[in-house]
Image (cartoon, rainbow, N blue to C red; front, top):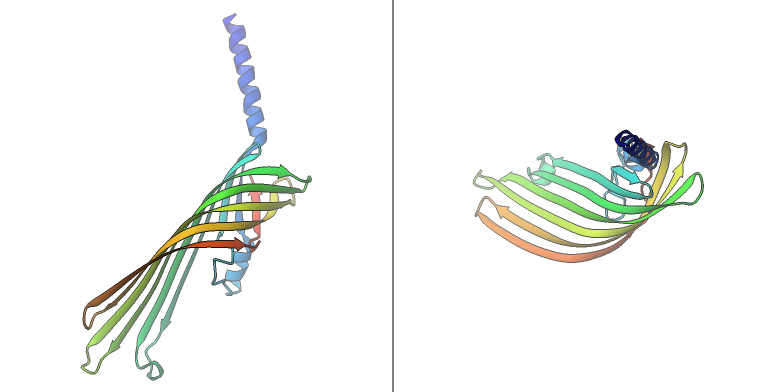
Amino acid sequence: MKKLIYTIALVITFVRTNAQTDSTYVEIGVNTLRIVSVLLDDKPTDFEVWNPYLFTFEAHVKRVNLRFGFGQNKEEISEIPTAANGKVYVLNDTVRTDMRFGLGYDFKMHKRWSMRLGVDFFTVRELQSMRTEYLNENSNVVKTTREVSTKTNGFAPFVYFQFHLTPRVSLGTELLYRISSYKSTDIDSNSLNEFTIKREFEGKKRIVMAPTALFLCARF
């Protein structure tokens, strides 16, 4: 009897494992529009309009899925001291990081088309800094800096459309409605008189982000 019970338990476990394997998978995607823009040196500057996520990772269990998205943009521009700018060295540096964690539900529309509805929690961290250096009339080096840091958190209901090129390769795009609040800190400092001015701001945003991403996804 014990052997029979043990055999039945093994069969049930095997069946459950196979069922989970058939309906459980992961997808990894890359935003091809971002890749092309980098190759063409025509990167978008307004990530409140353009989809900021470069990579996406999704774990699917039957029709429920968990997803993670990540994107980063870094720009650095230096202006060399010349007679045209009064011999001033200027450095502008911007770093922005976008992350999201979402939950969705899949709807099969066609053997090649599927749609997903869900909601993301997203967070954005952006730091903009500008530094200048120049010699004053007393031949002293004067340094000025300005740093603007912004933290944004919010939720984004989404509709994701996916076209299946093959059973394991697909293209996807999404419509987002981002609802968020932010806090910003603006700090100015000057080495000549050692003053520091700090300003703080906060606000809310409601933005509809059109389908500005084209994710090339592989299923494993």
